[in-house]
Length: 235
Image (cartoon, rainbow, N blue to C red; front, side):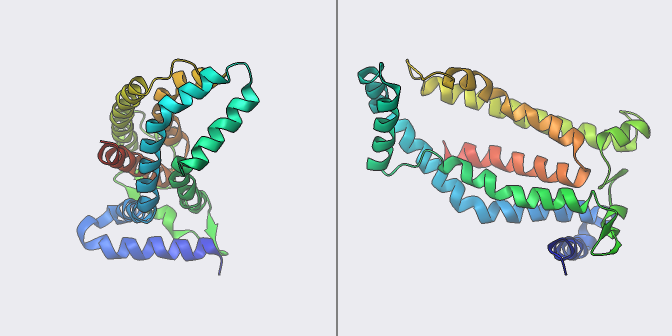
């Protein structure tokens, strides 16, 4: 039995579990529940990432001093910054781990709801819907079947609204954090990345538009969870 078959059975079991509460949308509810379980599993890493971010913020005055001292020697500056992180036991990449560990779950959902068959058998998950929108469908399918304000189109419109609200919240919060932790002198390239970073959350709109609805539900749920989690952990 393949990993995809096992995962498909898990989604079906979760859907059966919540069927009495959610009826025809049980599979969609199961995906939201699955996403919440994944986020709970990586929450300890998110807490560690928050502690790391606060520690890195506390190091900014020392890093600014190093940049002034080694402004004419980028290699020596890089080495000095790495040594400072090691001395203070702060990992510069700890914040990436929670996101990276969620990628396998996202790609499993993407595969499950993009395949006509799983383990040599017909993929029954494709029969499930979120209201009028098939979980294996995409936004372009909804536009071709009723348009923006058709049954499936309205489901996507609701998801886009949620993503836009969360992205706007993240945008304002990121801008505020970057202003509070602004560094006078930054190495080449960092300034450009800093300007783009506040807009990163809005890229989720594109993801929701092009992936199967089941994977879009995962993205929307996880993104919303992240916004709330970060607001609590970084407060």
